Every structure is written in structure tokens, then in C-alpha cells.
Image (cartoon, rainbow, N blue to C red; front, side, top):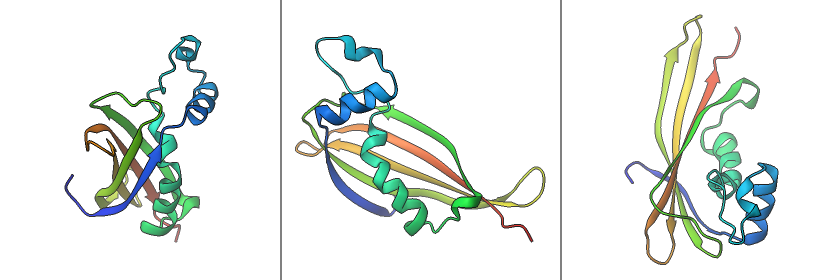
Length: 136
């Protein structure tokens, strides 16, 4: 992963957390006998980091910031009981002029989720934060 690492942490994929998330997003796979984390489950592993990202690393004004985009790429399955090694980095941080005038700060961040013991990359979460310029 290129770019400066903002933070690294381990995350245990616990059945209770997966079950709670699956219920919250009404994932039908939990009707099956072998539960599998829903496709967007990695957001649970990155939630605490995202709060720090906005308030500490990027120093964005929450009242002027929106979540612009989020996508997940999968390279292998995430399973209950795995310990994920999570690594976050800032991909880009740029300022653009909006179509209606005013400037916007657009920050793209990635979090990679790898199997801690093997290092196998399982998922990449990419998110975009957009901060609108303060009114003058």
C-alpha cells in the first residue's frame, strides 16, 4: 500500500458483532446455518478510526463535511474468528472549485483489511470526505 500510513490496528471478527450488524442492515444470509459477515461489515472495523480521521487527522469541520462516496473491494472472504490487521492511509487531499462556486476540500482515504497471521489482503475500503468552504 503506497502513501503514508495514518493508523494501524487489529480487529477480531466476533460473531456477536457480525450478528448485530447483520440484523441492523437486515442481511438475509443470517437465516443460513453458517453465518457469513455481510459485505459491508468492514465498516464496523473502521468506524472508530473514521471518527479520529475526521476530527484528528484531517481536522475537518463536521458542520461543513459530507460523506461523498464509499466502496469495498474484496480479495478473499472475511470469516468469523479472524483477526484482521487494518491499515489506513490518506490517498489524496485536494481543493477544487465547486460548480456553484466556492471551494471544496476532497479527501480520499483507504483502509486495507488483511488476515493478521498470513498478511493476505482480504478487503479494501475507500472513502471520500468533502468539506465545503466556510461561508464568508
